[in-house]
Length: 116
Image (cartoon, rainbow, N blue to C red; front, top):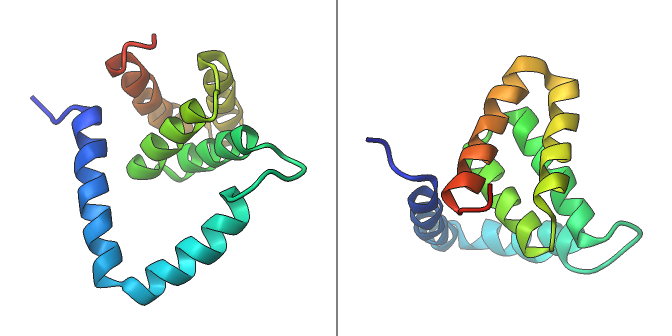
């Protein structure tokens, strides 16, 4: 049996923290600059909308870690299941079957969390 997505997220967090220690200068520049500028405060777009946009981009890119992280972030910002599904629909409308196949990971993750 393959690793659960919830276990994957936890393992990813640990590895990510180690990678930031190994690349401290880059991590500080990226996470105090870029990430704070995008997600650090409210703007014309609220944080939930920004996270949903990031999820759509992650689905398009097919980045497993990004998809799982942005789904988590969107939920933390109060996104509903329907908002997450509609975000995936937008990604599918632009990316076709490849984006749909990446959306299956979102559905599996939500199912594993008992949300669908």
